Length: 178
Image 1 (cartoon, helix red, strand yellow):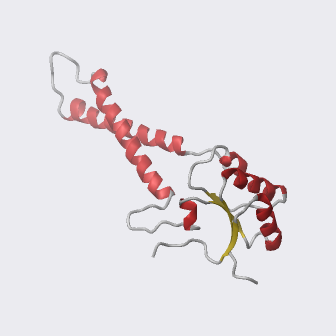
Image 2 (tube, helix red, strand yellow):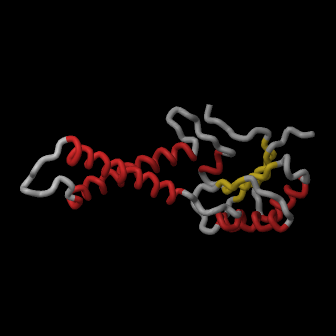
Image 3 (cartoon, one colour):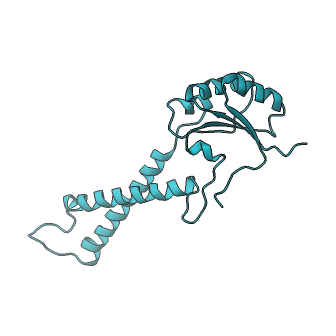
């Protein structure tokens, strides 16, 4: 058995790459991932990716900020140190709104930054995981798991017919910068 883990099809044009995806899917070949130097409209639908759950995470982070702000203000101004300011009641909800809004935005933004770093494995000090360096510059790369798709010659021919400039057989998952 060969040591090939991934078959990488390099394309110079995004339309050729989309055609290559169609050709591979017509022949029931599963695609591991696609790497592009720029966003391509409609590629998520073509690859069958589900809708992102990031809006739900942002809402949860914002709700946490709102609840934190409300409980903090309520504890400070109503329970711990109630003050009579201009005859207003201690629990005056309109006074809470600006601080609640600010903490909602703060928690949502920092939560999304942390989620982004966690999901993309971009923690400080960690080398990025890249399948092929040219995919970050000028090439469009289709990665196919060679172990689940045994017909390597057929895959090579399909990629070349679709307009692949180069087809590589990679023996490791990621290339590191070191």
